Length: 187
Image 1 (cartoon, rainbow, N blue to C red):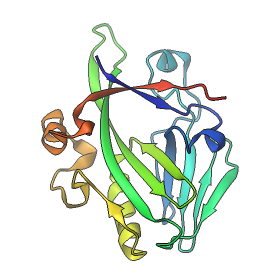
Image 2: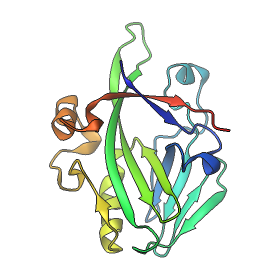
Image 3: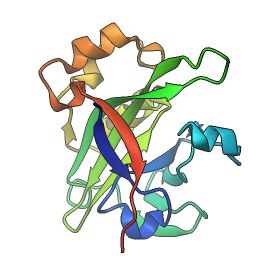
């Protein structure tokens, strides 16, 4: 049975400190996201893209977090005393492909936690090609990187990660388990 991973599917601004949320990353005007503008009902039923996506915009002097409607709810300076750590992780979940055989495939999701003295903002992104740009930003601003899987130094082509490579990276860690993202209702 997969490990259940509650995620904020709505009201990202109020819930991101308690539950991770899918976030589009924009770094140096490059957008990293697999979010759909509108998700057809059949894909929601298959748990593919049903969650709302917020946005993390990283510019030269600020990090802005916006909710699913584009309203900025937090702005941070990219300084080591403001963002005390950037934590990376990787999880996998199963998605069903549309078709007569109902095949499943693995979906890999990068977890990025922006740790501040007041809150931790946990972001999820399925566009693994964001990692090099994110690592460059962390390095350029001398932020503390917490990378228990060694993603920063991995020789694997993360956007084309295979299940065997994922298992090599995550063996004997909490990231090894299959996850199922579920919407969470928070009061």
